[in-house]
Length: 287
Image (cartoon, rainbow, N blue to C red; front, top):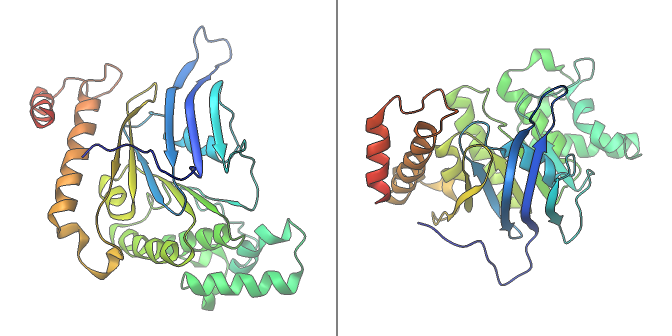
């Protein structure tokens, strides 16, 4: 299943030998989050970053947005050092909606801060609220919406600036299973319509396989790239039961076995060698 991330075209995102250590006040040692991370992401692709907790996934995502700088190495987006802006949409795990603003006003805020007029803000907010199925709730307030609806509003807020890059940090983690599956379908449809680059950080192996063209698997801290896998499932994946296909089942099993082994063999993990059967099983799978 292993593949290379090399493309004949110039990559949209290039990460080269990146390291990052977070220093803690009065602590003798810092936290080594990333060590020698390198990968490319091609244009118009949906990429997921997966791996055990604490492997630096969110740190990487914030580097792609320019919110964090590496200690060494290079992060390039369109050939330049990334900076936050309307070209970079960011969807957080928490909804981060302003409770005193209506849903339309929350979505329009992205344009307001860049000086766009009120009429255009309202029109574009309604367009993206309609896209995520929330237009009739435009005048509601966040407290009146379900968790899934709030996440849809957060997604519309990220999309309204028509970003070339959409970065998402566990955006569906707090949703119930049914709502999460419907949101996955919406994400696939939106991406297929607007293309661009989507980078998703997720703990869900199923979610990564279903949504992605490519999956970057990270080792435990300090985070390193363990493997990059191409997902060959045909698009559009909402038009058939992708989870029932042999390809999905095989890739899901392979990824989960690798992550189980990483966690079980990591001395810093709470599950370190607790289940030797897991270690033996996954070692056998990898040959």
